Length: 398
Image (cartoon, rainbow, N blue to C red; front, side, top):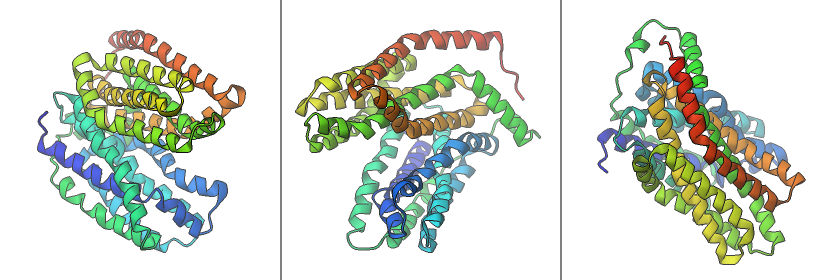
């Protein structure tokens, strides 16, 4: 497909800042926290607290980008990505680091909904495929960042690495400054208070079925994936499976997800976003259900299925929402979905642990697979019912 200048700029900027941000998460952050004396549960809280920032703030940042435009918020987010790493040198206690991570989480809380809304606002012909290519660049940061941080830690200390992270993030200013902002809708140029706009955005969000369905689907998918990450190693050891194979399982899964995401998006644009989501849910269910039946190298068949399912689901859900929500509330809609994504990442291991306390690991996988298939069957019914309700009760613009 042909990429516009704005699309290339936003994709390059996101790859730069995400790669730098991931450098600061693993293995750097746990090591730095440990040198400050953090341990046990508090160390875990420090590592995960930045996710809570996005959980709370993403919808509000999306609303503000609807009000002021995307480019200004991308500049603000880029400044946070640049400035915050230089401040880690002043951190002296685990408590200071905890506060620093909360503030640093603003950078991803801004970039998350605003970049997606910006791409949707460009109105690419093949939106799911465009989101797939964007996701390919974004998730490439999860590969580049940790590897680069680990290499740097071989010859320097964590504070210096954080400084390098800030310097790398500066490069994102070039593509961000070259972005062209899409005109703010006329309704947002009127004298409407932020709180009035927020109430209207939340009302639209609650009454838009695609937002709820996309958010619940992505949250549920993250629950399954993060529960799998937390408990598959334990299950594998009990089953006599090498931990090396477990590590390769997750590498194959993420590799397949990243590599075929653009092509999954292209198929979704042709097949239909709702159909692609249903297909992805069924594929994910099959991958989970097969996992207890496999051993050794056969595990990679399940990893390929799970990674492929992610490629279909994650591109299609955002595309579906972008086509069904009003332009005035596009950023808010992306913020709502981002909040549900973060929620799924947080509760995934917790819910998985609660289920495993009552059932064994194999039963939990079968339960999740059955729920996914049921969801795929009920999904079109819920979408059609929600669409009929919206036609009967159309939105009144602020």
